[in-house]
Length: 330
Image (cartoon, rainbow, N blue to C red; front, side, top):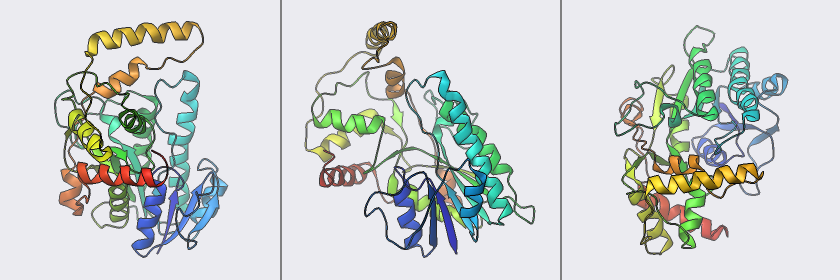
């Protein structure tokens, strides 16, 4: 069977490609750029193209049995309003294009990478796939809209063909964004935690992400369903920092900053930087993201699809840090 993977050269894409190959599928990719050297074997049929370009997507879709759709414009802190249209074009429009092409090509299944960010701050509760959604960013809102597109898609027999995977915060060798900055700050001893650190986070290692995607692709129970994907636990920021420090071989930070005053000072600096046309070193949104509570249950994918993650917090960060060092990223 042939599988098309969009966005295969991104942070998670290479792991998904390798997992699909190991599962015995023939793999074709569609990305804006070529992969880094040794990202995967030469057995992959690589295509260059934009997921919003219907002709490029239709060409890549020929002879495909299933699609894993990763391509997206990802979350950034405080995106300018000018990016709203780009988020909609790529995340919603691109998903609609991929879904349409898959339907026309009679591809049987689509697995769509979404995010637990669609739930918003869980505020002390534990949310499930049936909980109300409160997407608060361009990224989360467009992912929610794209989910609807995928779940409404039907195959030639009128049966649902889409599966939505709402990913926890993904970490691994190619991590970017907040967790990448956290690792580097802890590695250099320049990180001071904010708050008591008891707010919870929901994480998943990139290799487990790949396993979940390939498992869901042709599983008979997954079509038409939404699944949260995580390592099955809720980790406090204290536990995450402790695991990273242990993997780095460094002591945990000794001091803490209070949330309220720190956010107020950051806001003053952020506003002043804005007046001067500069970027503040720390934004309110960064502090809010760090201190938010995100406890999301992934019981459904375990019970319905039999997904069991291989990495817990300690083993996941140990492997991540080791590989980052081998690659010269630390």
